[in-house]
Length: 479
View 1 (cartoon, one colour):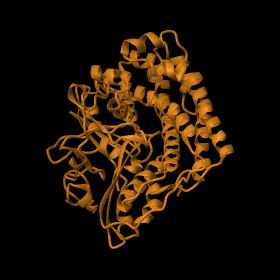
View 2: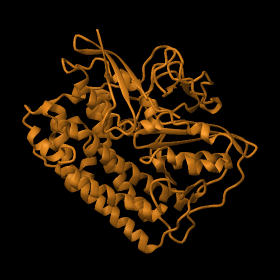
View 3: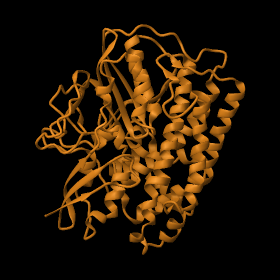
View 4: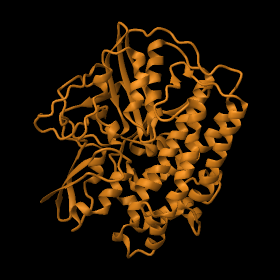
């Protein structure tokens, strides 16, 4: 048996190291390390609770809005108050823009360039792929990055700036917009739809979302242009549906709430392809293999105390568990829990894998593009965007949201006008968790086991595909 170490990874947000034990060309054990400790939970302790609205977004420059919303949601619960309906809609629009921009970045900048590598030069699709997706040289980035930039102009209208805006508050959003700005928002949303329909899918969003199962997907993509169809050709050629199998359980906190509920509901997609209620009280953190001192398993009662010399530890990442089990989070989980027909069918047939994760992100992008148009129309410009709030009540509160990469939670305990405890479990904390006290590994570690690396060892492209299919954000992972 041979041990290989891979890292640092390019085109990954933050620092990541993966150690693999390889036998007969296959991975038999994986250890995923988050080598960077951030300390935001300790920074927040002892501060006024509203400071979280300033500091928490600075955890990450990519999912800044998600961090803001998680903090604002937890504080709203602590204040026992409501948000203005316009503020909820404006938050949804900004959050959707950030998440959709993240999906574009993942597909065009992080994931697809790997298929332009010389390792795939013998495949008939390689020439077109290299021309389209090669890092820094491909034509796709020249189209996708301006589309992403135009989409993020939403932030200037609704939040004043991005990232790290203070516009997202417990009572709603701080900036009311006028009729001209709503017209600008709709123009941006229409432009984003046009990019998706002409470049990504080569079809209307409604037709794409009408694809109900794997057979219809095969029929739809036959002979079709567009980057999604191009990916499907590559995925089938390399059997990406058989690569990077996840642990089986998929979880979503629910996303994009409004007066009618949530666009994507909360729940757990488990065995037998059933959606079950999410037992929030069963979320725990295990630190047996993390460079952390022992603490309470319940995030509301836990403290973050580093222990860099801890025996048998190998990551700054804690091991979140749901009812004692590792779960995968992300767009695949959101769409499976939401019952999106195509994603639910793909997961029921093949589980979570590299192909299905990428498909789910693109299908989700189509869904939120349509939802953005609806939310913009629903804004009532004569109504307030932010309501008055109340004093914070002592005790614990939770803010649960869905970032692009998956389930994000902030647990706050306030006492006498100060933050007594602050705990953050980010999406990559769930997906890149180390082993727990029962020696059960996290989702990525499970997905890597069994991978055929052949003689390539640390240069095996399959490892890159699996890691990038989860789209890690390591700077969000360890606090």
